[in-house]
Image (cartoon, rainbow, N blue to C red; front, side, top):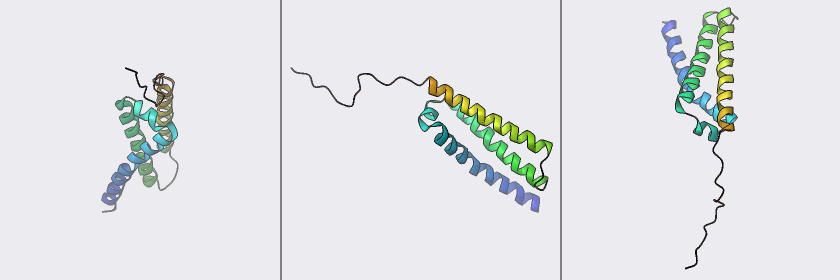
Length: 112
């Protein structure tokens, strides 16, 4: 009975972790850069981070809060995904489109 409850709670944690990952990513990396990014990058890295976070929680529940080799591996994989997300965001920051030169917020009137 308790295993079924734990699985349900882990599924809920995954669903909560998804928007938390994207909120953190948009706050840390900037929403503009996230909007420029190709969607498979966002989907893959976001799902990976939420899944690894949930897997880490499941490992801690299984080992009663003790550090194991698998837990350390999951933490290192989560850090790798976070570094990859930072690198992709930085790439899109360096390659963002230049601002429009002629658009200064004012419309020009032509004399006729």
